[in-house]
Amino acid sequence: MRYSIFNRQNQSQIKSGRPPQRGVVIGAARSRGQCARAATVLLPIKANPFNVSLVTSSETSLGIIAGNRSLPLLFARQARKQGVQRLVAVAFEGETERELERLVDEIVWIKVGQLTKLITTFTHRGINRCVMVGQIAPKNLYELRPDLRAMTLLFKLKEKNAHTIFGAIAGELDKEGVKLIEATPWLKALMPDAGFHLGPKLTDEQQAVLTYGFRIAKEISRLEIGQCVVVKNGTVLAVEGFEGTDQCLARGGELAGKDGGAVGVKVAKKNHDLRFDIPCVGPRTLEICAAAKISALAFESGKTLLLEREVMQQLVKQNKIAITTIG
Image (cartoon, rainbow, N blue to C red; front, side, top):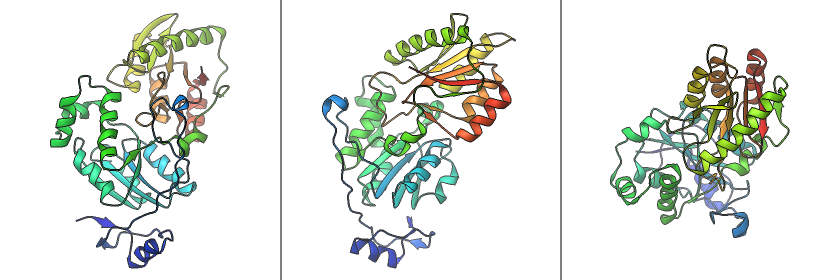
């Protein structure tokens, strides 16, 4: 049984072409409301290396594949502000924040690996565009119990990394008429450009180490290893692997010694496919930097989301950590 926030009045509004009103869950849905497709903007191949269908933020109906932490919540709020009238979310048990339930019109909870249920959540509700926001904890990718469709998909992949796995999922969605698109049109205002800075002014030494760290981070990202490094005094202390950015920062800070003082650099890889992975820096990242005594954190300008900026400003002030854009 699935549940819908649409009552009969709202369903009649959909049929007449008027946008549905939002409401509360009132019972089992008896029909599937169909929403009109919004116009898309197809960019030239040169500006769109993955030949992906990109959209303006004028979508009226949108699906969300929601991972963990605050990004799915932030995206839902931003999408509402920019006119998305109907949001249908796929959420993952043990990963997605329950708060998302009150920000979307419908939500279906699944286990990691239930690819068929993920796809039918959208196709059965007339959703033909969706975004992927938030992460899945790395350990869950090895503890998943894939359904037959997911098992077949994984079996066909020669290389199993984020790009190949999520690219294959996008392909499965596309077969069923659902386009996985970038979330950035709704989030661009939250991606600081060059010159952004919070916290103490960088010393010349810190600036030099960050520049070196940026070069190393871009290289490891090119090799599909990770997107973050921790550096101190010209020495690379930690390189992000499968464990993720937070654990890389914690490990690098520990290796920096009791006095700390290392710096972290987070980048996006060349031709980064932002449908699957938008680099993010948020309060949790900064709390880990503080615990690890990391003195500065740089992230790539124009390609990284800064989450919960007001909270970040408070944490920067409390912990005297510099946050800056680079690249």
